[in-house]
Amino acid sequence: MSDETMRTGPAADGSSADEAMREQMAAYALGVLESDGRAEVERATAASPALAAELDAWREVGALLAYAAPQRAVPDGLRDRVLTDAVASRPARAPLTVSRGAAPPSTATRTTDGGSASSMMRMLPWLLAAASLAGIAVVWRGGEREREARQLAERDNKGLQAQVAMLDSLVATLTASDLSTVVLSSTGEPPSARLYWNRDHGQVMLAAYRLPPAAAGRTYQLWGIAEGKAPVSLGTFSSAGEGRNIVRFPVPAGLQLAIGAVTEEPAGGSPQPTSAPFLAGTLRATE
Amino acid sequence: MPPDGSLSDVACIARLVAGDERALGVLFDRHGAMAFGLASAMTHDPADAEEVVADAFAQVWRSASNFDQTRGSVAAWLATIVRTRALDLLRSQKRRARVLDEAATMSDDGESPALSTGAPSPDRGVEQGEAQRLVREALALLPPPQRRVLELAYFGGLSQSEIAEQLSEPLGTVKTRMRAGMEKLRVALRPLMEPTS
Image (tube, rainbow over all chains, first blue to last red):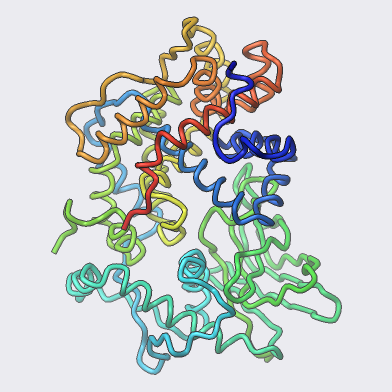
């Protein structure tokens, strides 16, 4: 049997359509599938948990190929540079803590529609960003950092999951059906933005303030997130940099916005966010 | 108490989410050689490789909360970031022609200068050494045409059409070889893909 006719794995008994899809999935997993094919794979895997699981496995195979690269001695100084560059890109901080008066962590308040722990883990950066706007204080406590770090190490995933449960509860509280305004804000510094959701017209309007132009080859992307669900792209946009920029996008039918957020993505946008949001907010009452 | 080698990769990620940059040092000590080796194999330039690695770990630091352990290991996530950064660099510098030239120098048995199927380096941790051994053995067992297709895709970032053009092979043949190679690797590398805590 030649290489070209050899079949292994689940596709061995599958249809030619399945085989064609798996050929595309192999390229997708290696990150070399053209855009049309990518959309096809994403549709197929969204509709089939089995295909999605298979694609995940292949993506990990692709990542493991890194071990096939010949080993190189790490240059002197690279470790220091890595740490310096990383911290310069986002200052180190103490663990996130909740101010007095905020809802305590409690799994009893979990009200998501079946969202799993893994889905909440995927939403964690969004929830953290949203929670910062909803009254949760992100407290920088340099003096207590060592003690906090020790406590976190002891709790590891338990502590993280407790924070997720608390944020989950908070988001559920803030997502009543009659709310329709989302304030998007960074953590203290400009830019900021406000998102208006017109449910009757199925549109959102984003007004961004003092948003600098995206870097070359990059674009801004607006995301809508339903409770317990993955982010959905509402559209990409650019910014003139000064003053106020306003853009409008249609909202996919059936999408119940709970969180709005903006990320910077490669030109053309991404199917899912590839970076943490720099603007985000939960639905809140119209003022 | 500073983080040390006893922390799992996932625990290090939790530390990063909490803002503890020392956990990044732990991850670098554990995976820095893999990251630098991969970046070097792709960029063929030590300075570029350092740039890629620094950018990749900065992204890990900024985006640690995006890590989803249900979708793979920390090492796999890091490798994906390193590779993406390296491909971005290659494309931005329009140096893919060089990758193609080097791919064209492969010997007839499909062996590539970029890819090693030899013994793993001895001075690595047990887990990484085991990963290297399994990956290299699995690659060595692939038919050379399948291995070559995977090399061009993984290290050169070439699409199936570009590979077909480069190898003067029908597109369908390239697609079949890529899929067959990935299927075999998935089976062979299953021990490395079990869920980790």
